[in-house]
Image 1 (tube, helix red, strand yellow):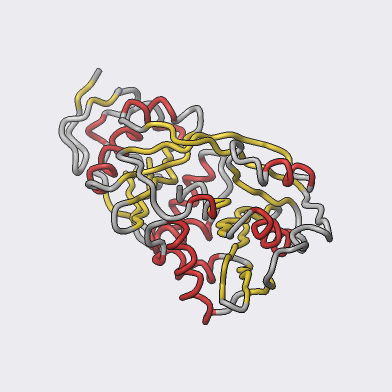
Image 2 (cartoon, rainbow, N blue to C red):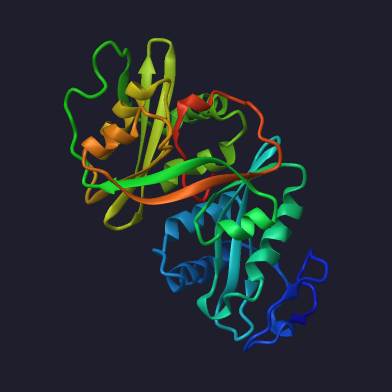
Length: 307
């Protein structure tokens, strides 16, 4: 075990020294738009899709932190903190370059992020690989998430019946209504990300009645052959199905929905529409989890990088 000099914002953090001495790692720094290319390269290094548009969204609307590689080859590690005022935040894009794995960089970045988050309750989507670290840092599981993916088969009968309202594409003038509906459901302010959603998403859809906007959803592409639909915020499951169908029916290639398998409304419906479960994660929280908003109106997240 080797004790190197502390990374920025940390005390003395023990890191396992292998081929690269810990003294070679620069301090943690805040990333910006100029780091986009390096962030994309790190995603590719870890076998993820490049997700250039998602990185652009996060670098502009969140707080990204990273450690430069001591060999000069881009970034050694990254993590992103997104704040949802007044007292929530989320973690995403925790990545360590393959050649620098198991040196404690992930732990150091997470400790730095939690210090930056202060008293906010912090949530994240944890894979089986990352979960042990998060548990050691005090995160606890709060629910499950399953990614359903496949070629979407629309059903012309879906979402009609007694459900009032009409679905249409959103325009810039709809942003205040989207933010209001979202805040009532989420119970915190996601406007900093939502104001960029129109530029990030391929399509935005609204569900309206004579009283105004009652739901919305977005569709965006993380790789050329897959469309992710999220967030989906709706008054009930039938409204959510209508919004999803509006966005998924014309989509090219596969469609992905990240759903809570313990809520019965959408997983079976998604499966019947041609989407199969492809991966599972645990949503975890660090800090108190209190009742807020109207969570039964939240059907999919913006992204698994934005728990």
